[in-house]
Length: 345
Image (cartoon, one colour):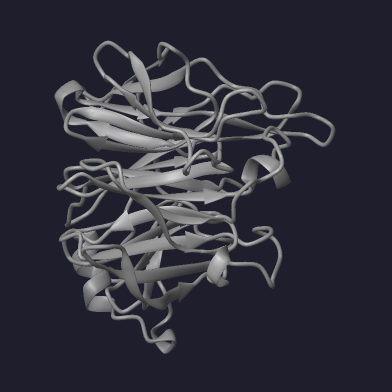
């Protein structure tokens, strides 16, 4: 599909009276000045969801350089009275020719069961899958060439997880992942929770696992996206709360210091005015990107909102992936990309 250039959509520097550093915005965009528009490319539109779905969601997304392809999981949020169904495929977006990406369905074997977050580690894609009434929520490793999958973690000392949502893995092989109540309180597809929701640290080298932040300490309710700083000394975590439309719910990005045994020094990094931040990414210049309603919000290292990467009216950004200096944005309905004067992973 040939990309559509959304000329009317720009990364908008916010008004000067809001205290946004325009020089940093202009430098990030690679434009001549604050009044020049930066084009966002729409490169793919997903087929319409089935009749039982209220909406579709494209959350789990990851770039595999060896394949020069992105892998994207698809979810169908059910209408009232329905349960979310497992989907046997994920989308593979071959970007060998970025001007004409080839997007196809591929079928992991065994299939994933409601996959959310994804992360590339040592050549394998690790998925956080929500599970359902019969398949426990778990972390699944997938070979991106053969699509063979293997469950690598599906319990906390014999207790099943609730609804794993996202994960990151350090260069040393330490995984952090979020576990919320999404399958039970939103999608009607998992059993009643056995555990508090929160953030776990799992040392893949030793097998040691423990909760390092969460509802048990009153810090999180329905934690969602995760991202390391580029040097992996900080961990950014998004918090959804009860509902993205609840003004009293969580719409917060927290930041923690990463220690040798867990997390410390929790601070509020930002609070969103545009719905809860879902997926989250960072760049090499210490900026933070949060996927929200209608855009990707871009923050500097201090949590100051620099501007917004606007997507199509009525659409909702869900997650992102870096491919060199291109930021790919996955929404409910589409895939977009924009070129920035930075990069991440």
